[in-house]
Length: 120
Image 1 (cartoon, rainbow, N blue to C red):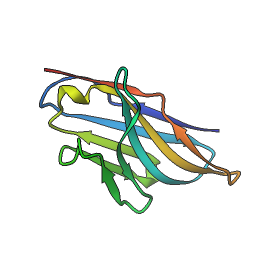
Image 2: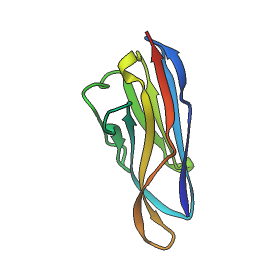
Image 3: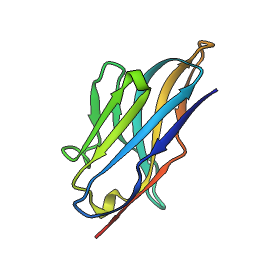
């Protein structure tokens, strides 16, 4: 069993900052890419940022220069530092990780989601 636990969401004023964390736990052999997605009401889930096991990052155009994804491989944790937040960043944020279990099966796993609300 593998699960992801997210934390760090909340309510913030426009221009403020939040830091999301997502820790993977369970029968983990190795973690490959990790990513953050978000889904606003009535919208499709979209990729926000991703990071490979080697540390290569990529971002959606809408967050470039404002958000930073990072990971701590020793803690099996991925972070999303969000600065200069805008009301349009309001969404439920989900982490995703591609994980090979101890049984050597590889699947994509999702966190439970954490709400981020940015007030104007």
